[in-house]
Image (tube, rainbow, N blue to C red):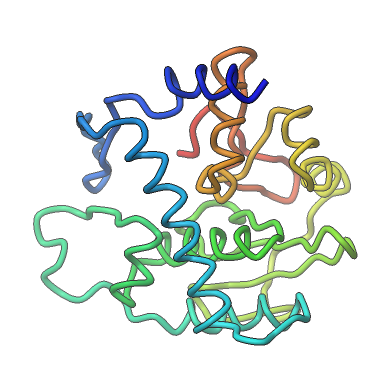
Length: 228
């Protein structure tokens, strides 16, 4: 089974084409890195993110809510994009580089926060959109729901406007584990940056169709084949 999965992944998980966001425009790009290099890079980033989480941002913190609060405090404290960086167009940087450079736009901070929460073992989805700044977090083990606002640096009851319907909450609950993601064929953007989840997402997308959740509103889950 592993060999079959790996063979399919070798064909589809990482193509030689992609795209780069330049402001509101998206330009196609081609890259020639081998599959093994790309797989290794994805895994490497995951390991580095775990090191950031466990050794710098939330060392020794075991309580889920306190750990997520520490992640939020770190990300929300990052500087804005310095003047002059994007004079020729807003080029969105990867979440890992947001950590390395210690600055980012609201959407970059939201993506980075969601990815770190996913690496920590919980669920995180932007509310409305990445640019909005608000994020919904769920701790699967206790079904605890937490609200954060990266843009305005607010948490809990201070975050206004989030009143998720039972339908939306049940949709997020339904993909709390790997097997549930596979059966439902839905993944968050954070999931797609975790090697195992990314492989299963791409295989399912090819064979059956799979969706990526880009955001939630109070009434629905925004999902498509790509998190855009």
